[in-house]
Image 1: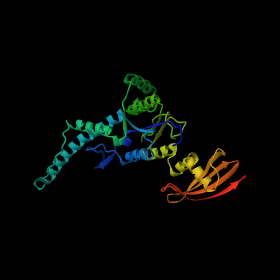
Image 2 (image 1 turned 45 degrees about the vertical axis):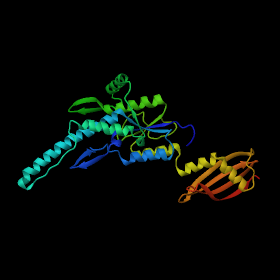
Image 3 (image 1 turned 90 degrees about the vertical axis):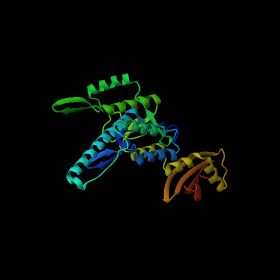
Image 4 (image 1 turned 60 degrees about the vertical axis):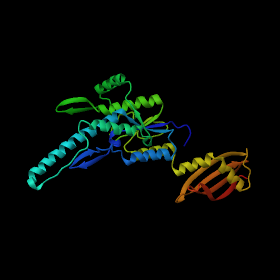
Amino acid sequence: MPKDLKKVSVFIDTNILQSFVKHHRKDYVFLSNLGIPKSYYDLVAFITDNRLQDDIEICISEVVFKELRQHMINNFNSFCDSIKSDMASYAKIAGDLFECSYSIKQQKESYPEYVDSLINDFINNPKNVCRYVPVSSKERLLDTLLDKSLRGVKPFTVQTIEGKTYKDAGFKDSIIAETIFAYCEEKDRKCLLISNDSDFGQKFENTLNETNTFVKCSSIEQAIEFLSKYYETSVEDRLKREFTENTYWHEYLLTSIEQEYDASVTNVAVESVSQYEENQYNIDIVITANEAQYWFTVNFDAVANDIIEFQYKIEND
């Protein structure tokens, strides 16, 4: 990883964290589990595979879990009502020709507690590497949100419903945004928000780089791309760093052509890295020693992590 890059907190919105399934032209959330998508664990794997656990954290705000919870409770209630109604309709249509029994293992009264246990298990399971971020300083947050809603500051939006103008649409998104701003400013971290919502306000940029502090993207796949570029985790980036910083390779190349690796080496520059076969790369590197430039073209096997062969030429000898 490049040195001195600010750490990143990845915040995931409800519309990314929760999956939906269509039934009878209606979208349902999963009811027996949280419906966490596979792409979430692709993000976890990206972090662990690249040893970025100390640099990237996955954050889920209190508001997101509350919204996910309410979606599940609402859908469970409507699902139970729908089944009961369907069974009554089928019995009415088919009469004595129809006989069916079913059971729902949770009651409406106990289902919220069941969902709470799912959420707590998810937060506390180390494999999910999830940091729960509560809404802190609620009194100060309320003042901020009230002021922004009255002024229609994004993500608050002005909407006209039945002839009346409302400025408080986007309340939930505003709480998420303010939670993110407060958390990342307190922790001195960059924020990468993943959300399908089109507008979280002007403070969010669309590119993760050393300059932008608050960044938004629309999918976990895009977030992984952003993080890969920011932390330079591609094989090409890794090899460029490896052959720039690791003096083992400099010494190996010079001693292979019967040159000393000592204080006379004043500069090492990797000019390019390119793939020419699966897991095999060409690395063009120039080493300056005793004012002579040694130009190496290295064939490198990324799986074996070793040099296959190399060619070289000398300039200014």
